[in-house]
Length: 123
Length: 108
Image 1 (cartoon, rainbow over the protein chains, first blue to last red):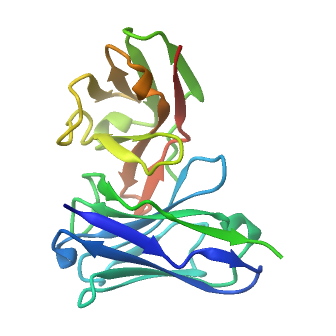
Image 2 (image 1 turned 90 degrees about the horizontal axis):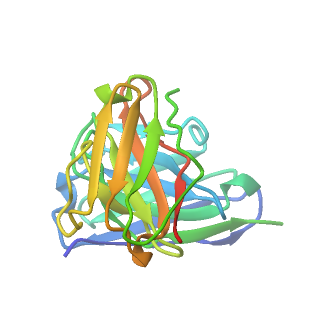
C-alpha cells in the first residue's frame, strides 16, 4: 500500500529556513513525479512544486519560486522541500503527493497523499 | 495564469443529487481532476481525467467536462459526502498545477 509520511514542520521565525521531508513506501519511488501542495489555515489547496521521477525536471508556483527548492533522493525514497526566507504567509499544512505520471505534462492527477506536516511562521 | 472558478458552497438534502461546477477558459480541452477533502484529513482523488473513477470511489461520483465548465456530480447523497471539493488541472502554458478555490458541500 502506497504511503507518504511528511516531517520537518514546526514553529519558525520569519526569515529563517526549514527543510521538509516526505518518506515514501509501498511503491517504486523512482517511477513517479512528486508534488508539494500546501493549505493555509481555513483556506484552499495551493500547489507549491513538482519534481519529475529522476529529479531532472522541476516546476514551482509563482508565489514560491526563488525561495523554495524541491529535491528528491531516489536512493532513500525521500522527497524534500527546502524553504528559505520564511514568511508569515507560508504558514500552512504541507502535503506531499504522488502523481500518476513520471514526467510532464502532469495530466493524470495526484492519486496518493500524505497526511501533511504543519509549518507555522511566527515571531 | 490559468484560473479555475468554483462556487464557495453547495447544499443538498440526503438522497438527492449535488452538482459542483468548475469554470475555466476552454476547460473542456484540459484533463480535469476532482478531490474530496473532509475536515482534518488529506484530500482524496475522486474523479480523474474528467470522468474516471479511481479504485475504491463509489459510482455515485461522476464527472463531465465540456466547453468552459466541468461538473462533479454526486448522486444519492449521504452525510459522509460532506466535504470540501477541489478541481485541478495541469496548465501547460505555465507548467504549473492549478486548483480551484474549493466548494464546501453541505448535506442538509
